[in-house]
Image (cartoon, rainbow, N blue to C red; front, side):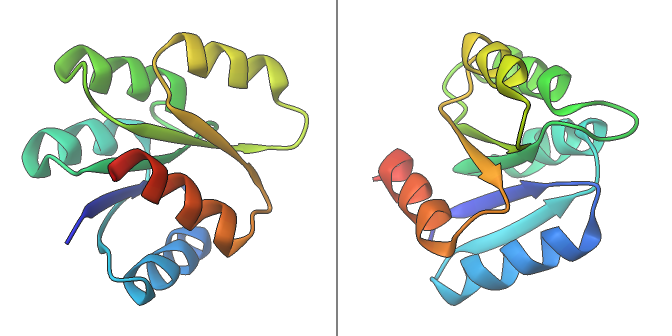
Length: 118
């Protein structure tokens, strides 16, 4: 069973994604900001990270860079709001494997995860 780390400061979104992923057979852990995501990544070595861009304490781009600095093979998909195209480009340059625009569809999320962990 693949372990997915969900990182978003919005609890309702973490819960929604968690239910979606556990329903599809994934093991899920959660973090509420980038700083906690880095800690959780180091402690749990998830197979993939779904990470929001805009968060308090440490944003998603900074956390992405820290995680990739710790593990160059880390698979991170960024979650972004509409209109953040420049942020998406920066995320890809920093090592993100994909990005998903919110609001998102179940099939888009599951398809992106399966593509990266297969």
